Amino acid sequence: MKLIIKKMKNLRAFTLIEVMICIILTCIVVFFIYTMMLSSHKTYSKLFTISRQRNDLRYFETLLKNSIMNAENYSFTTKKMTFGYYDRSGIYASVLGTEGDYRVDEYEFDNNNVLENNENKSENLNGLSLPSFSGTQSNMTLTIYKGQLNSSKQIFPTSTKLRDTEVVLENVNKLFWCYHDYNENPPAFNHQSYLNLALIFNKELAGTKAALKEINYESQLYRFSMKNIRFKNN
Image (tube, rainbow, N blue to C red; front, side):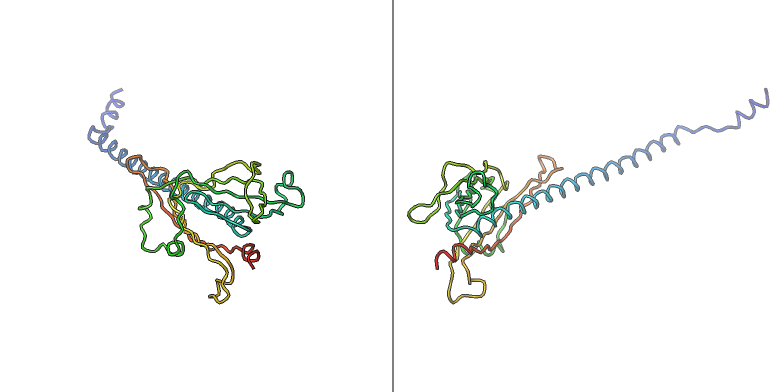
């Protein structure tokens, strides 16, 4: 018995100071792990938002390119773009018939003054501060109508919708545009009618606090040929 007691006396336990140091070190390690995980999550959320923004842009580009390249007539206001053409794709065969018929693609914004006819800015946005256009912000919607040809050979929309209204691009700040007609003695890229567009849009990045929210502004320049207008006018 005495031997056991003697051995127990020789055993040393952790002192209070050692326990406190261990707790402090553990807290420091946990804090840095939490900070790294939080930072990684915020970075992932931001990159995911930007990726979605680019996907939205590609979807919009595909739709608009099809509308412009096939257009036989077009019209612009400060909030609406309209393109009329003969659709032979067969997508809306149940309404247009298997041989196709006229259709009108109508792109519209929530607010006025988003669209602006500006030749210089439709080709070059260098030197412009994109956040300075934050005062105007709209969603762009697309509605597709069955078209009808009038006596002036202009295609205008009827009341028949081929596809319901859908949002094709969010948070558009500005869209500069300019139409260039066919020129017999042009630079190489003017051997056709074409439409220049300069798009400015944004998306709020996920993973940021409301008081410190970050907004990613982007711009994109386009030049779409209008082959049907070229052949129609000549």
